[in-house]
Image 1 (cartoon, rainbow, N blue to C red):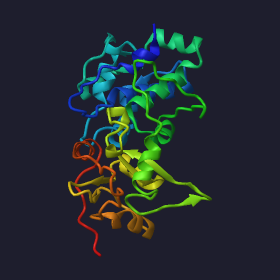
Image 2 (image 1 turned 180 degrees about the vertical axis):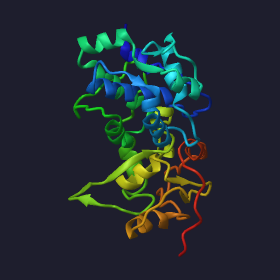
Image 3 (image 1 turned 120 degrees about the vertical axis):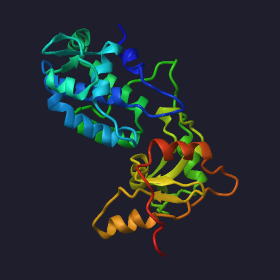
Image 4 (image 1 turned 135 degrees about the vertical axis):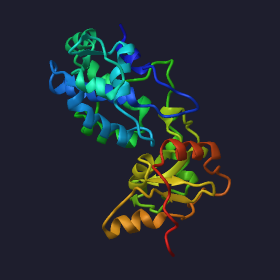
Length: 297
């Protein structure tokens, strides 16, 4: 049984690029717990709060519940659920999951494979991260779910899966004259740009192409905030700042809140700006809540 293939093909509700990372998040969480306690079980009532926080931070912008993946991940063959009533999940009802003592864990065959093949766990985790989340979130997501992955561990995609275009970064940085499209940062170490990254507007993991019109040159801070939904773009390619963002110091005010309404810097003449379809995807699937008013001049 190819566990990497099974993890890569988790059945998810999908339509028109809608994000539904519920199952991948639960599986990453379960792999992290397995790494710390291979014999442990996850009682729904005990882990519900942590799973809800995962969904709130890394799931879709709208509110959702961890009951869905806890019950439905069983159908993918990587997860099992038992309750006080016996084998099987009591359903997706919150009350049923809590009161029945529903407990989940990785499927027995998968646990056996993980014991036989120590390299399988990091390979599964890397695959899930690559397929469902932007690279800017991988490190912190591993920390949140308790996954300890060697930085050099990586799973190569199969020939049937998409391959990244290595030219994307160079093309996007050049299109924006090697400066952050939001704040104008243009730092270099000698002659090499430093702290600048090519951000996908529609995530590569969600079928976003490696094209300049799906990219922005952003500094590391604003790339992370863009991928987390703090920052976005409006129809006129001006910066949006979520009303849900809060910061008490001058740095948060100057580096984030002051961006509201600011026009994107670039691209250079002849380069394609962000396409409307990708901006619209980000606005619906990533940006969090309503945008705050334009910052005063």
